Structures are given as C-alpha cells and as structure tokens.
Image (cartoon, rainbow, N blue to C red):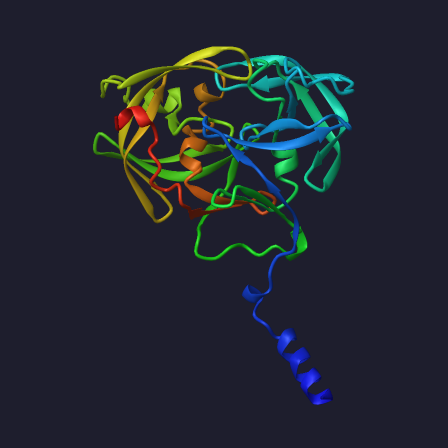
Length: 307
C-alpha cells in the first residue's frame, strides 16, 4: 500500500502543465442582451443589486447618475477628462469605492460619473477591474470565469493575439479587405460597443475609402461624452482574425471628427456584435487575448440584412 501511495504522488508531481487546471476564484452568470452587450449584476458600496455593462473600452468603473438605482453613497473628490467615441469632456471622479461582484469584494476602485440615459445601465465595469485578473467570457454558458493569476494557464487551441494599448484601451491586430484592397489594422476591442467593426476617420481618409461604396445605412452614434457622430455602414469583403476568415462583413466608415473614433492612435473599433462570436479569455496583465469560436459564430450580424 505504501508503495502504491508513493507511486501516485510521484505521478502527480510530474504531470505536464497542461493537465494542471487554473484555479477559479469565481464564476458569475451574465446576460447577453438584445443589444449584443454583456451585463453583470453587482453592488457598489453596499448598494442594492445593480446592472452593470462589461466594457473593455472603458478604462475605469463608471456610475450612471441618471439611473433610478444610483442612490448609493459615493463621494466625488476630483475631475478627469473622459475620452468618448465622438469627443471629450470633463467629468467627476470618486476614489476608494467597493465593488461586490459574485463572491468577490474589490476595494479601492475609482468610479467616474457619466450621465447615460436612465434606461441604459446602472454603471460600467471597466479595465480597472478587468485587468486585475485573467478572465473568460464564456458565451456558450453565459458565465464570466475569474481565475487566480498564479495558477492561470493560457488556453490551448485558441486564437492568441498580442495586445497593445492606445488611449488606455487594448488593441489587437486584424486584417481587413475592402474593395479588393488589404489593410493590416490595429483596432480597439470594445465589448461595450454594440457594433461590428468601424474604421476610424483618419484611417478612412488616409486610404481614400469614403465614397468608394454606397452605404446600406447611416448610423448616428452618441458616446459617453454626450457628443454625436455619423458612421456610413458598408460591406467589407473579408475580415481575418488570427487564422479565421469572415466574408462580407457589415462594417462602417467613420466621419466623426472628435473623440476615439477620430483618433490616429488606432485604426478602428471592433465591437461586441463581432466579439460575441468567440469565448474570450483576457489576460491583460500579460498582454494577451485568446479567442475560441462558440455557438454564436454564424449568428446574423443584423437581421434586417437577411430579411
């Protein structure tokens, strides 16, 4: 019996790393709403239950002062500049707040006050939380997995993309073919966006893309800075992400003149209408995102395009 026990221990000690599972700190159910965005239930400073947007395009935690549920105690002690999709503005900030999400309690978080419409969401979970842990958005099970950093192992058989940063948000490389021209782009990954893929105004102008297609629709967007802008919706011949190709993808040419979508620091924005087709593992501290196709891979981008 002793020999058997020692043998089992020896086998355990030499197990390959891929057989050792990362420890899960928490697994939290989320809602994938009809607007193609991810929402989580949470509490702030011992509040009642709130509905927060999961947003990789937001650098900080955000409260929506217009929400009827934003009645919890919060003290604003500074001001910061907010870079929205269509412009910038000065907003209030509050330091040292507590987020209760699932079984976790995270202290010392800064919250920004951004007045969205009352029926949008109660607040936003941004990168100040998202970057603290390796996370997995599993759209098949509608679960956010939070991993312990010390035991985290990058998932295998996925599209692994190195992340860069601009304006405080993560960018990934993609290849886009438009009008038989191939472009290598660096685009923001923005789970808080309900759109597919928008090319930024400087990129559109630099490559003389405006007017090369008749738009199938015009979108007027309003961002967190309360400014508005216009996007011309067109079709991209092909989008290549890692080793996967997507054909005839509805994207857009931006004509916005202020804000993130007018920035030369990134070429465009990849929204959650595209990203939701992958189970997404975010390891932002090590600078990687891992994408695994899920059961939404063939979901129509816009139903009106197939009706």
